[in-house]
Image: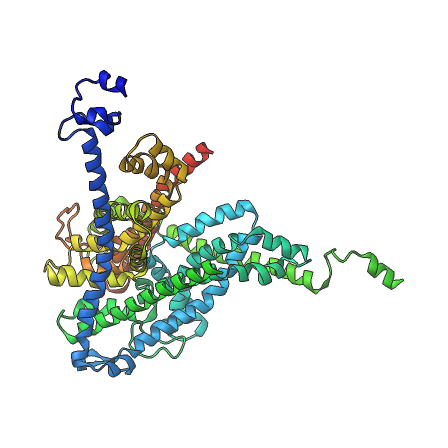
Amino acid sequence: MQLDTSARPSIAGPNASELGGSIKAGSGKSFDRKNRLLFYNRFFKLACIASAVFVCLILFGILFLMFRTGVLTFRDVSPMTFFFSTDWTPEDDRYGAFVFIFGTFALTLLTLLISVPLSVVIAVFLAEVAPTWLRNLLRPVLDLLVGIPSVVYGFLGLTILIPLLRDITGTNMGDGILAAAIVLTIMVLPTISRVSDDAISAVPRKYRDASYALGATRFQTIFKVTIPAARSGILYGVILGMARAIGETMAVVMVIGNTPQLADALFKPTSVLTSNIVMQIANVPFDSTWNNALYMMGFLLLVISLLMIVLVRLLQRKGAHS
Amino acid sequence: MKNATGAARSPFSSGRGINSLNNRLFTAFVWSASAAMVLFILALLYLILQKGLPTLTWDFILGLPSEIEEGGGIGPALFNSFYMLLISLFIAVPLGMAAGIYLAEFAPDNKLIGFVRICVEGLASVPSIIFGLFGIALFVEMFQIGLTILGGAVSLAFLNLPVMTRVTEESIRAVPGELKQASFALGATHLQTIRRVLVPSAINGLVTGICLIAGRAFGESAVIILTAGVTTSGEMWDFNLLSPGETLAVHLWYVQSEAIVPDAVSISDKAAAVLVFVILLFNVLFRIPLWIKERRSR
């Protein structure tokens, strides 16, 4: 301590007798290194807090704007009509959105029906069956596929899938929820299978060893032990895929046919919430009921996707408890 | 005699019986199904590249689009794609990283922060078209600037912000605690620790995240159609933030479903190939240095 003060006699005053070290003592100027560092630290922290608040503000801004615009629909249309009528002819002031709500759910369900079994098979293959070199090759490839733009998938659906479906059915009908579901399957497959793959790989080795020690085959082990143990992770992947399928716009627009009629057949041009919004929003004035109804449909999508996040959270909490 | 041979065979031996048959069938099924799916998807991508890339010319890549005649290019659309990508990254990366660093480093562990995390996660799962609607309400209606590059880029940045936040938080959290404590023990302040230790150690995850959102911004179309429109200003190298900003992904959709040019098929084939090629290029260019770095540090 003595040595410290004598070595730097310029630091006179009350600070000098306290703990040494350049940062703690400071050099006496009003904006020295210590103050500067403290200032930067504080400023940086504030900037970080502001950014985090900003992200939350965007969410609330979106919720608020969508709700405020959407709810105006009900000035002119009763909620019963909006949610349960199948008659969407905005030109004649008839705004029944049931066709689109139903279409969205039907399309999502059909997509999951096709994609979940396939994805789980691929995940099992990646996590349990494939040799290491193939696994290390396929995982980055699947990650890459997640990044392919949706409009490219839509383009493929339009130019390859729909002519193919026309040939198969032998009619002029190719557009519809089956075509859209197949395109969406290809899109969500990498997502679901990679998340499930991680979940299956995370199952502790001892479970498998115990199962093999009981004389189970690999088939039995995977179905009776590994998949049940990775259940919540697989479900998480399925919900992520579902969120993507519900919100996907451009790939669906290109293959679904964009006609407001109920999707009660696989090959029948129809429309879903997202495709209807994107096809019509550009042509309507902002303050019209038509526009408000489109915003209400957007608000519905928003609510559905936020509900799914809550579901994921609950699942994770449940997983943490057990 | 028969019994004796039956008993002599070990109960653990496989090769017969319904279970092992199941097992083999299952293995064969998993192999073939996975191989079929993966090959199918890769074949689709190959098909896109193979249809479009061989006929590409610089005239097409840099040329102006045409509404009615043959031989239109994609120049302005491609330029807008990169221009908007850059603007949106300039907004989304710093803000997203700051928010992620706050959640990983500064945030106390309480209910409020838990709620903030749910907000970020919720925002990350909001369908892209909602950001488009939000962009219309914000830029077209509230600020009255119409369909512009600026509106599109900011909406894109909003779309990518939560993803960047989550990626940053996860990668910073994954840095071993010892590194951080060692830095503190050397007398570094929190900011110095974040700048010199945490971010460099987490760079792998961060770059992967930036690559992810760059690819997303480049290929996104729904947001752009709603906030930046389906036309370009018709000039090359138009840096004006207030011009309409059709991007390549939008152009692909537009040419395929709305345009009346006679060579729409060939244009969309080539545009799709360019789109996929650029996305693949992003991934390769960004990730190869990381792979090399990882190999070296091993």
